[in-house]
Image (cartoon, rainbow, N blue to C red; front, side):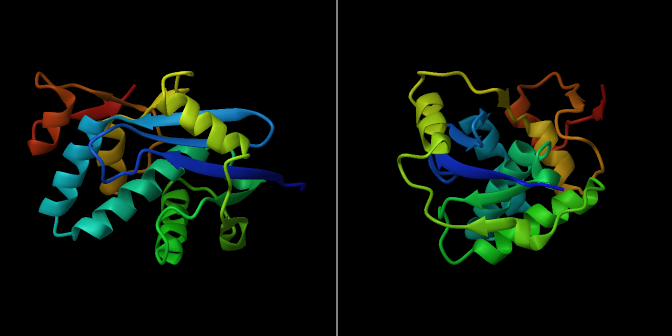
Length: 180
């Protein structure tokens, strides 16, 4: 089966107080947004679960990558920009674990890390969405990330949130996620 070559870039680091945009390009362009409130709530939840701050940031980055690449991961060779130097093996391992949890077969060699560069379509898409020139194709919700952290086998985007509180507060135990 022929593979497509996909480049991935990020604008707005996970650990900052602004939205994070992850984008890929393979001729087409696709971007997702992780809102700052969702990041803050998820990082707090992961810290309460005993993860160190750096491990929580890496987990959230890998989860975002998986949501971004879910539909193209099996038929692509993915090159991810060097955002978290020294953590490439951990990020690859987490993305592969998320894929296995969803029943996807992905080769470890299909995910590589290299400098993507400012001329990349992925960089242009990520920075364009980050600056408000384009809209993200999708926004990740707290309920999706919570399901991923529990290892639930659900397709990203297939959860609905039933909560009377604001979504970023639901991690405190008031969440009931069900399939749509």
